[in-house]
Image 1: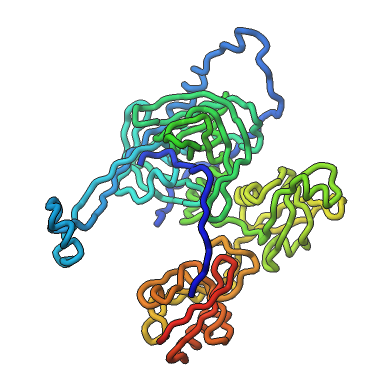
Image 2: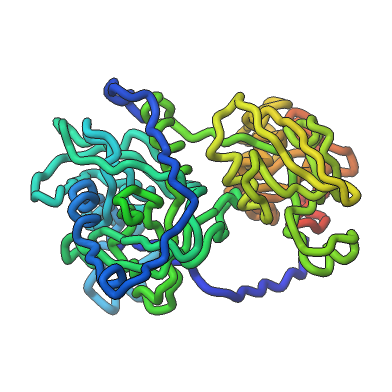
Amino acid sequence: MAWKMPLMLTGVVLGACAMTEAPTLPVTSQSQIPLLKVDSQRVIPQTQSEITLSFAPVVKQAAPAVVNIYTKKVVERRVSPFAGDPFFERFFQDMFPQGQRRQRKIENSLGSGVILDASGIVVSNHHVVAGADEITVVLQDRREYQGRVIFADKESDLAVVQLDGAADLPTLALRDSNTLEVGDLVLAIGNPFGVGQTVTSGIISALARGRESRRGTGFFIQTDAPINPGNSGGALVDMEGRLVGVNTAILSRSGGSNGIGFAVPANLVAKVVNSARAGNSELVRPWLGVAGQAVTGEIASSLGLSTPIGLLVEDVHPAGAIAKAEIKRRDIITALDGEPVNTMQELEFRAATRTLGSKSTITLLRNGAESSRQITLSAAPETPARDQRDLARGDGLPGLKVVNVNPAVIDQYNLRLSTKGVLVLQTQGPARRVGLRRGDLIRSVDGNTVGRVSALIEQLRKTSGDTVLEVERKGRVGKVSYRR
């Protein structure tokens, strides 16, 4: 099977800032972390004395709740018995795998975190604490605690750490990040380069910045407050010392701050922490079942709009909340619960901060007329059942792991809404040698359509001699031929 698919990559890498089963949380007096609203009016400094005011009172209030996080990870790697001898390393490294030994190596990394509950609940970045065997958290007053991860969400790059034996710790309040505006002053507090806690100042330089992620739900606050390696998980606070975001990444070619940093908005932080406090093991996001693109000037002109606004609906899944609300292709979604929507990342972020089972209002334009629809937020359904299987030798193609495509699988693997059939999750051994790859969709076996895992296995068991699989890969259809 041969696909001619040239791979072309271009762009800028967004790097993480860090250097490098969830037990139930203790009962607290508050069931959920609140988001504080603020007056929408902004005051512009009028006098020289106002312009030269110090940030010291804000730092004194916020800094005690920002912690330094040190992690250790024990990594085992195989070491050749000929290690250190250039001659034997070159000529015999693959000849004696049974002689290999394992070497234990300790990897250290550092980052930052924010205390959000006096009982020792700390939020940080997932990439700061992921896979750590030991977590040490150091407060500003030099107190040290051992921590353990009780909740992690890789997609949002957030994790919640419980400090052992902690009580009556300083905390930060969370501000409703939807009230932020470009130009608002902020401070970034963290532990850059492991030098200890530092504070940098800047402004909110942009809102609703998207960042590539598996589900496409990257949605960040952009700031020019200097953020460097080690700041990951630290606090981005406003001028009243309230948390508006958790620093998570920088845009850099050198590894240092270039004045473009990103923070996870406080609204999503609150959702993750509240999920942890509720004893959940993962963050389940509402699934809307919609795909769309930002309305450009050209699209606006073709639709008769005076200005580009909103998200043009390109596709809907019949099982999604959008389709159930009778929102159709070519409709333009402009807001969710009154909050503006202009990109898919923005829509998915707005939905991700809502509670499953709650109702939201979609504002849309259809043929130039504005209307609204009420939707019920729910998780992506598992219908039909996944029926995930690892094929064995008697199944006709050993080494193949497959699953039925359903809305939950579409959401998890970021597939097109129209995707159907059997998805390849993993290949090894014979399945890999015939040319199948992770992410392939198997459509037929020897001309017989297979829409479910059970049908695929049934057809593979019947094959003998030359076998032909019709496979879709990245939107293109080809054939895989092999002799059984």
